[in-house]
Image (cartoon, rainbow, N blue to C red; front, top):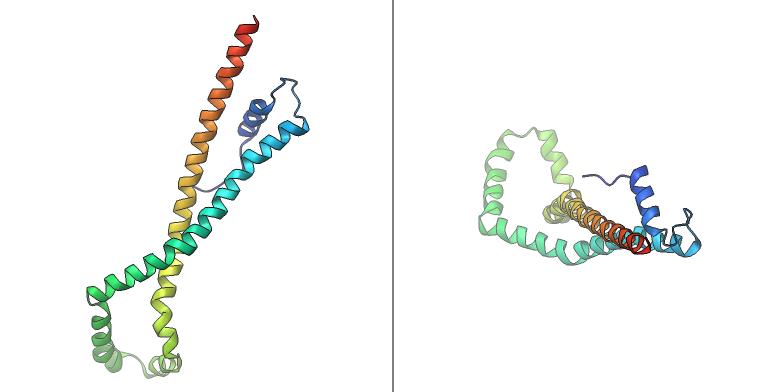
Length: 156
């Protein structure tokens, strides 16, 4: 689910729900309420982004690396490096890889897992947040609509 601008119908619905005095126009106070509702989603996104970035990513990276170490991936890669790479890789590639500092190879797993997290986990979290806020907006709209209908029926 990609975040898209609201449709004309959605915008009309928001404005109708915010038009408390049923004037057909939005005054400054009503407009302020609309902006608070719309920007609360952005604020939640920013908060979720930093929460995932600061709290979740480091633990997932270290946990993934510990799991890979536990199942012996590191040992298997070293054995593969000694047996296959030295014998079959073209000398040009071996020379190129020898020029890359060891610090790059040491941080590569962290970097790759971090990239994976940024490409998949954060967008998934945003999708769930979007769905949540859409459901909240729909429920709020239904409550406001029922209240307006109740007020109109009481006035008759």
